[in-house]
Image (cartoon, rainbow, N blue to C red; front, side):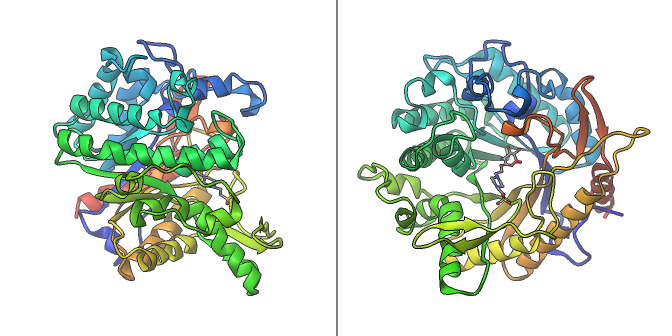
Length: 449
Ligand code: GBH
């Protein structure tokens, strides 16, 4: 069975991009090599009780040393594009000077992609902030936004020039701001809604400040940002539950998308977090609202909400629905609903990419094979939902499966496997799962016309 969109889907058009994604800290390893500085995730992992079983990204998939093999796997899959991120602490020293050895790694990676005819979607920030910046307040310090723009400038000068198809400033600012500074489940592990709101503002400001340099240095590439979004559904039809669902979407989606696309924070957010408004200087919102060429959406699941009294919402967990080993509900229709709502809510919505979609499962190798049936079905059903949204007029240009391979799943360590490719973390042996083989079959048939 192919892992493919349904017959007649607009996703079969030849210029629709199919790919797979990874991020630096989750796969690279080589944490102490070639001048790489400490990141907030190194520090977080070394703090007892933060990551399951005390695991860390010191070795991860050892991709830093095995990237040629991983490029060959991408070629075997037949993807049009590969989405990866640059480790900021690898490429810039404390004083903002370039680290040639670190930059060289990404040059070799981009050259390898070019040789194989695979487009590069390059993310600048997938959560691995240099620790020395966190020591000065991290994303709570406005200066970090300017340091980020400097970093974007350096990277686009060093790596631009036709090698990169699309630059992404941030992956999921919601996670950086909320999980990092609001509930503490991610690095740097701080816990205050006020801090989360301020961190979000500086993340978005950094995004806007980076855009002019990215455009000037690499004018032919696309420039955009990636947000993790989820639709919220009311548990009952009551007005209170419908309000709870809307508040959830404010918190999960509009907190990021309204500043980017409307130039303002959603007023509702401050009903949820009273008195937590960030400090915004004159002109900031115009910087944040600078035009982008595309918006990447990472889609995994939905939320069902119930009111718990005024301006307080409660997640509802229903039994008897399909879930993954992350305990996230499988709800493909959510992708269509979300995209149609975006089209309705944002008249200036840029073209979309699904920059992440995928699931974790307990995969193991038996007789050289990994039979990940649920993943094949998950991807197919989400492809179908994306097709339906496109048929309703939503402009979607590409789709990246998360992830190319099993990797360091943040606070969950190596236990949760999201890969198309299985990784044995003892031996670093890679094995293509059935989903990968079925995806490759589809892409090969498609290329054959
Ligand atoms: C992404 O984040 C990351 O970009 C990536 O690095 C990571 O490996 C991948 O996802 C898998 O986790 O409880 O059902 O409401 C995803 C951000 C935030 C998405 C929490 C799911 C909860 C779903 N996630 N959200 S649910």
